[in-house]
Image 1 (spheres, rainbow, N blue to C red):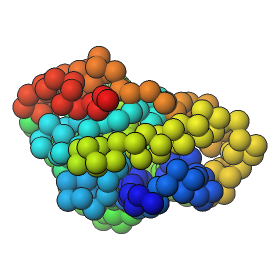
Image 2 (cartoon, helix red, strand yellow):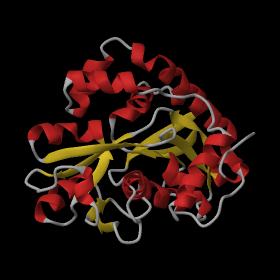
Image 3 (cartoon, rainbow, N blue to C red):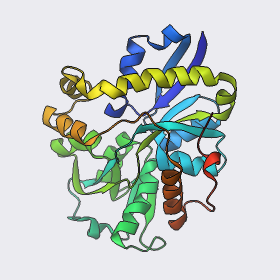
Length: 284
């Protein structure tokens, strides 16, 4: 039995993993796959991959591409969710900001440098036509819980996070959402450490075969919307809207998409060079 560890955010996107793990499907192909939640998101998972704390990660596309270019010894093995991630732009309930334009020059609360919340603050700034040097400032708040505590206390002015994950807090009145910022590329990929790919390529392929079989039919699972609503504390109508906007993938990231992400990161000065796709994508 191969022992492998995978990390991901504890959010509704990853329910297919929970279902396959619960059913012990990986045991059937000789793999003991263990899941670890990373509340801190992409930056925390990049660190875990680098340090060998996990072997695989379900991770934001732009975050892992940037970290591989910066030396993370991992590669993308396939896209997991091909639709864009819709980031909500949130402020504290009592903040004076009424629109995204009001946030120019204020502090973005980010989970950590190199995280999705950090990188997407740059994408949002570009969308708004802001100056990245003078109009973007950052406060590190670790995760969603940190944002809930920090924003009302003035540590950071706005916070980007997946809008359906934060929707319960918006409904409760803890956050106000003043805008949205979708990723201009497929949002989640599966990345694996190079050492593991060299040693256990067959086990990785078996894992992908199982998760892909589940994601192909995930939306057709009876009462899946009710299960998601209950498990993640969301309203049924919000889950149904999210499902209608979300598409999983069973394919590798294309060279064109990898180049598009790099061009965007390069234009935002978040990477210093554009690398060949084979440095990012695993091909057998």
